[in-house]
Length: 152
Image (cartoon, rainbow, N blue to C red; front, side, top):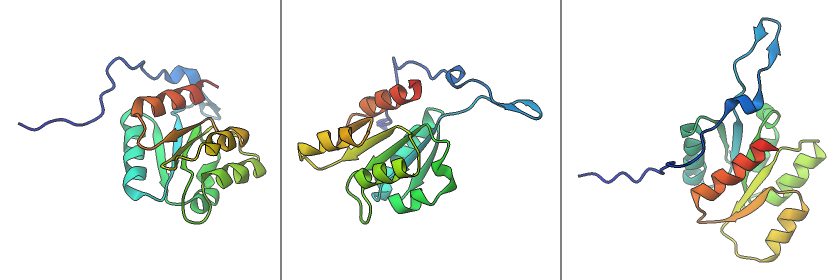
């Protein structure tokens, strides 16, 4: 007998697409806007897992292997939330936050890290991160923070 280890979302409030409203186009109303989440992490397995998770609950999601790749993507605009690792080769999540602000992008950012430095919480908050989650983190905690960002 196989054991199902997929995350369970029992008791979780359903996503309400009406929160985002309808967009008007020259042809009338467009379909309801679906939340669009970017995942920026050099750990391919984690990045892929988080993208799959976002898609499984009905969000659009796109993976990026680096902050640099994200910053040149046309999809960096119009996002509802960004999940980014703090420690990556090249530009990390904290510097990504700075670069986003320099480009005038104010999308909520959930930072994730395996580092245990206490000063990171203060630095993440001072740079405008929605939160800083330590790996391994609870999926429910991540989803709660994303839900909070969607309500802002």
